[in-house]
Image 1 (cartoon, helix red, strand yellow):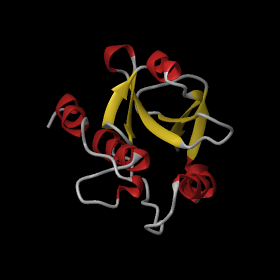
Image 2 (cartoon, helix red, strand yellow; image 1 turned 90 degrees about the vertical axis):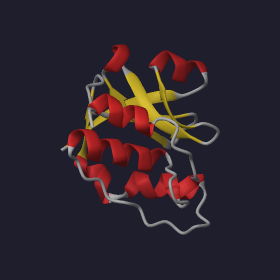
Image 3 (tube, one colour; image 1 turned 45 degrees about the vertical axis):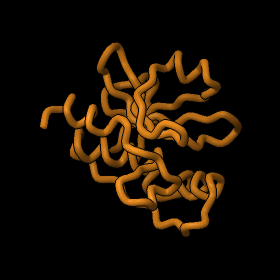
Length: 135
């Protein structure tokens, strides 16, 4: 499959917190998938209890050894992981792709996997964008 075919097939994948249901992903699962399929980068799965909520998952990701494998960069570049927040804690992640002037592919609760521009994400309340490249 081409890069475009992989991304287009991924768009619309249903969301479930922790990606626990077959055929679903959460934001981290979407990032893992794209990193593996488009860039050949392996990211570990997080073993979280089925009852873990968003705060517990965000806390686990923020201190997970995998984060030590990410180098923050000043500007987005193709394949960068993008963390973002709506409050003090960065708790959402996506993947920056250069297509169409730059989009962030991420998974959200109501829509599943989508591709949004930075201005669109800012308009719906996301802030504190940080760009990371896996080492």
